[in-house]
Image: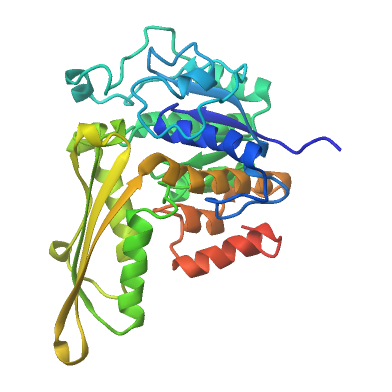
Length: 369
């Protein structure tokens, strides 16, 4: 019997894509017996090593035209290299549509840390659709930079026209948008989104602590989450005008669990600053203030340090395979279960324990979406 494959297209061959591709070969070598670091080793018969990259787009001159295996290690990528021997894939990175994908301030930083736009001809919508069809891509994952609203929708449109499942790892509201969601449903195309929620990142930890206080009868009075790091994601987010949807996504991921209004002045969640030498390491400071029995004050304060992109890739691997499983089953539209489990701004928010249970039921075929 032929091996089952998930044919994947990647938009944005940055740090997250690097970790994802490295992971495919890392787990192929390690096998199931030693598998660690994934939430679901097998989904619908698909393992992490069954994902195959068949197409990729980027706008950086140091990646365009290179094999994906080389491009994932090219500047300005700076994430941990945990599998350096990724074999040649035979897939060349194509020049994507820039649109609003490169913030103007990026040009003011050293080339080794920022984007260097390629002068190659960009693929237009018809080109992207043709490549997706010609390669037989099953799923496309969108990794365009935060704030790239036009670029994100460009690739979502390409998926609709090509019949390819869409995983939106970025905080442009597409899968969680009613009109876009209805379009994916009408076309019978699965979609997962929006804004990837890492395996053990600031969002899931903050949500867990908030849920703990709520479950234990401790009213939350104030809370913040401050994040900083040194990859291109944090450099890009220095342009605060690009953060509108990101801030909404991260804030709602926590506030949606709290059954009362804290007031806008009492909740602050969002990126804080860019520290180049941290590279792909992300630091998060989280604080929640509440009141115990008798109105006595208490607080939780926590520091989290994670390598950002592998943390993201673990969730992306599950979202991609669930999208493929839905496609196999002829299911279209937003996938509520895996979106709630792996995304910050899904079409419908659920407590994480519930989202996990829903995802298990979906994988087992007991739940349609």
